[in-house]
Amino acid sequence: ILDCAAIGTRLHRWRFNLADGTTREEHLDEHHSCVEFGMFNQRHAGRKYRYAYSATLAPGMFLMDGWIKHDLQTGECWQLNLAPGRYCRESPFAPRGGAVDEDDGYLVSFIIDENQGTSECVILDAKRIGAGPVARVKLPHKISSGTQSCWAGRERLSC
Image 1 (tube, rainbow, N blue to C red):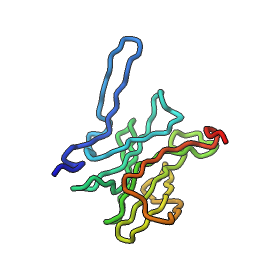
Image 2 (image 1 turned 90 degrees about the horizontal axis):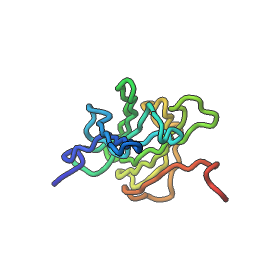
Image 3 (image 1 turned 90 degrees about the vertical axis):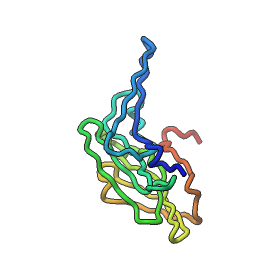
Image 4 (image 1 turned 180 degrees about the vertical axis):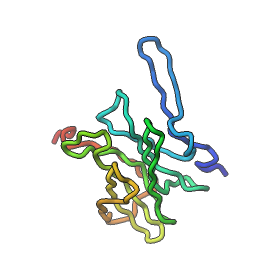
């Protein structure tokens, strides 16, 4: 049976040169071969960015068991692992109001707790993901481990 570790998913980037039609691809982190859903601050979309945030994969499963912040400039990484039986989803980046630094914001994600049969939305400080959630919102019921998410700030929503 194949799992994410056997497949060896990793943080990867393709760059498309629209002028000459060439494509360049590269691995962004050679040390962590089991990550999924690489995210970054969307204010830097289409431009050079320094930080990426990924979900780490639980060995032997198709479930995510934590998050990792990658510094693509220095190669440093910071990780937050969840307790056994607790699984997460990808972590879209939500910029802090008035942010100056690229990583000044939050990661918003979900945790599914198989031990308790519950779920919660968690918010992590993107500068210090290893410190754990700065806020938790208990959900009224357990959500699917396949729930997907994205971040859209108020300025992008038209009501």
